[in-house]
Image (cartoon, rainbow, N blue to C red; front, side):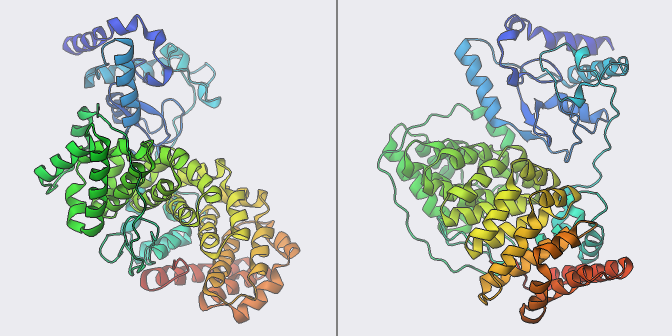
Length: 571
């Protein structure tokens, strides 16, 4: 015990100098648990940042919720907050103080134990978590709460892609159990989409999905078209070498000399050399699968990422396109996210040139195909700028932004972020106004949102039933493939909205859905007719038990078709 106290006191002494200026530290640099500046900040699933060892100690001691927000952890994954770490480092250099050092494990454990003791001793006080007002620099006792700990998260989202056919059926039957997103009808659309060709026609590479590990069965066949380059990109000098150890890829067969050459050129003081380097990297990763695997090295990523926000459009576009190419290999996707790429891509979405924005949307789409990345991408803030792109970008960028949001929306936390950001009304508007490709993708996202009770409520509040019926009416006489997809996905969204919804039938009747359903039952494609049959049974007042059996049979057929053939997500 004495040695533990000694180590704790020793670590606290390292902050003696900084404690004199503690009030001057930006509040976002302070760990909510240790009340000291963070040396190794990480992001948890609630979106908050903590000192790594402090939050690890918090979890190890049995806490299953975020200390600051009291939200349940949707995942135990800790995401390195590279941007915050760099900002802290730069701030220390600017004000002339020593960079913070991480606490040892015993010190971190002591912080958590002190917090727990304070909370247990002040259960009579009002809970601060009810208001969400947690001031990071307040005394530990001010953050006490009498609230009970939330329930632990019982399912790992990382297992979605590994479910067999029987578990897929069970998840579909459990749509209204209130559990995590992997237990909903939306998962059937996830499996369906993985069978469909994924196109990045605007990207730096013609992506043959049969060998790029994007889980697709066919190629788009699009040819690469060279994109214009600017003449004078800016220079860059990395100050983040210490991060390399943190994101070192395991099992890589990197050619040290080739990687070293690219790193030196990407960080060269001459802008023309940098421009040529990103051009060469873009071409090399476009042409060779082996090069994409070899060059996805932490040192190279560290040199490449700052060029994504270059003020020169050519260097920015080529840098983002190169990252898209690297992201095609499934083994690269997690390493790219862990390298800190998402904040850079978000900056491109917000302020990049149009070509770079298009590539950035494609990159996030590609990275979101990996289940391990979905929560991280949402937590890091990619959803609002992707929603914005649905309205303001070129058609190719809108399609990729929509598909990125579609894959992200399989995570419950991301669905909540979509609704909070006002995506429902935007998606309904896109379904009514846009071209078939964008509208189809918007409807798929709405299907995922409609798979939960909260989502159905948000859709009802947005008058979604009338909007979807209007979409069906608009495409009633159009026999094109695009319109058929829109019809099918609109019916699917209505079917999901009907679940345990006492208001659905009256609102759907008022919107005039019956005439359209009868027409689709005769003229729709096979998959649309299946969905229409179930929905007509609901609308015609079939008994609740029969209704349930019919809907369950439909979902089981949907699950089997997801594992064996083409589907409505055929883009």
